[in-house]
Image (cartoon, rainbow, N blue to C red; front, side, top):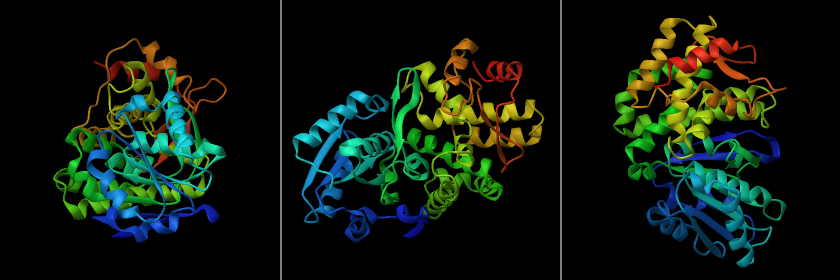
Length: 359
């Protein structure tokens, strides 16, 4: 097992990464509050791992289990109300701890419920997908979707611990695993050129599920994100670079109907588009754009979005959370490993990028 710390003063917390650690109660115990435990999962993950987590926590506190439908559709206010209703019916109080066992949807939903239930209760992230392990479980962003936009309703609410058992990746469908690689590639692009080069050299081992490679992937990704979050917890500036590719990605998800693309697939397309836009603005060399495109393609990720009217995508971009004063702000690249935040993007160049990478 390897561990690292997200440094946020009194709200600092550990990230534990390893094989078989879902069965180690001593990792969970320091993060539990004095009251009952709520285990939140979905109907795909629960049959695989909920029983194991229940056994790990048995005897620690009274346990309430809540299982929701798998998929992006559960990231909704209606599902928040349902989960809160079940917790109220079970008599769950403010001294409870909610454990979110699953992928990014469960982590975002569970974290948001924990943030607002009786004005806030403790929660733990127990991610079971690569994407959740390397991205959504770390940093305290929680929330649900609205028909007009992705993650538009939410709160910052840090977990008390993240416990990532790599054994859960064994049951992950290949498409889901590859989706998670998009967020991994992102860290190399925005902040860590050495990590990007390592991925270029080791992609075959990563795709084969080599244990040493996976530990390095998850640990490096979490370390990169933790460093950014520690400097800008509430996304007042620097943290926005973690959204590289996401302005395009969220528009793609919303325009095509949530669930058509996995989040990481949309991010992969968004990163390709952001690299193209960076090159059009003379920030990124054409050779570097080619490197980015080839790695994303080699990872088995999509590189083009459906050919919808540009205005359809632009409509969602204009209500992106990073937009300021009605101006779309983008995370672009000034070379591999250096991200910048800018709103100075000519619409003509943006439309050219959308035209080039839709089909």
